[in-house]
Amino acid sequence: GAVVSQHPSWVICKSGTSVKIECRSLDFQATTMFWYRQFPKQSLMLMATSNEGSKATYEQGVEKDKFLINHASLTLSTLTVTSAHPEDSSFYICSATSGSYEQYFGPGTRLTVT
Amino acid sequence: QKEVEQNSGPLSVPEGAIASLNCTYSDRVSQSFFWYRQYSGKSPELIMSIYSNGDKEDGRFTAQLNKASQYVSLLIRDSQPSDSATYLCAADFYTDKLIFGTGTRLQVFP
Image (cartoon, rainbow over the protein chains, first blue to last red):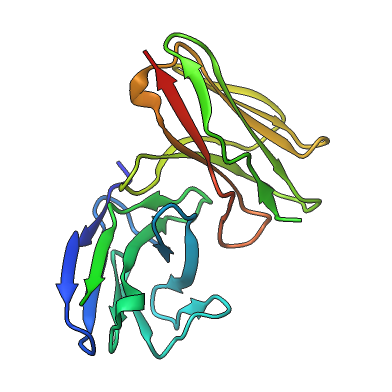
């Protein structure tokens, strides 16, 4: 149980384009989903918290107009990186919780912007 | 002071030994504590959660919590080379999100 999927697992895009990443909870309803970013050899950085049907809460320093988060249902949240630039290249990981504090992570999406 | 602190390591232990990973947290009340394992290039995987003082055992893993000392540890018995990874400690501090430490890299050598 507690399986979270992400799609795509990796993506290469050109600078200036937008990329959408999907995060799905496969066997439970996720009341809250989280989006993290991790640069090589660095720790996890929380970007935002999203609850189904409401606006995401972004961490300080994260541009909400650049990283659009939609949590349309209890099993799906999406992160759209708009007008991507090479500095946005990173490992993006979502996690989900069903109400307890335990977070279950998706396998991550590796984004490369050329 | 960071809210959740871990020694970055690497912690090197021989195969079959006990690996002891430590984590301290700031002077804030927290309900839950978690240990995650992250292999290089992969996402974190939940290993243990602990909510009350004392020990909690699950297979080769034992989590220990001492709220008075603001200290959480993870013991891995009979360490295997496949246990080589970065171990992340996290606490909730009664918020809706987890605060992660920077992780301790464990190396188990044959």
